[in-house]
Image 1 (cartoon, rainbow, N blue to C red):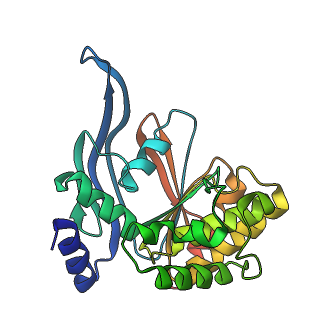
Image 2: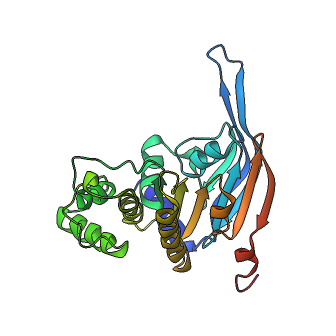
Image 3: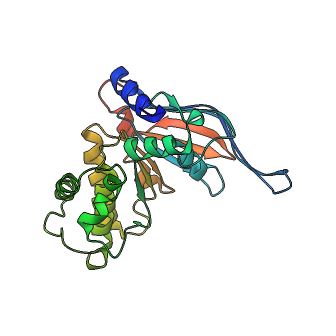
Length: 253
């Protein structure tokens, strides 16, 4: 059993509430000569618990993309600890980090990032292929997830045969097919018209009500209102961390 597999097994057994725990996170980018180019994040502390729906906001250069990359195990901090399900990713090899990322985190991107030559069923299968899931099981799980997002009648279609909203639904299905603990959405409605964007946000709302933890990067306050909590970054630090009206109305608050 690899380090990552052990971490996944032990985390599930302990039912850790903190899906993401950032402790004193800093991320500095350096010039080739070793001097500092930019300090994207500086001594950030943040806990995101299971079942939360969180928006990360901030102006360009505030550090929100860097934070998303670290939360998503796409980048490592320069200093501090980033715990994903209780495991500090800084201690993992690249192979184990990839395993954690593939099994515990689902990604939705603004640009969809679908493979044009594949059918939508095959696109959704891709994360399962890298987990060595048998083909029959991959197809079954892919089709079930496409049914879940309302595309059960389009299984043999390719991305170019779908609207932008339908392509983003395929991207949602691909993100969910591994049953992740965390869904990361980076401007998920950025390439969609307002009506189609609202349909995607409703789908995310439904997924959150079912218990999924969602973290979304957005620049739009109206979109952030769908979340329960809004974290605003400025110059690499957390400027504010507040509940939205939706968050304040949640039972138990």
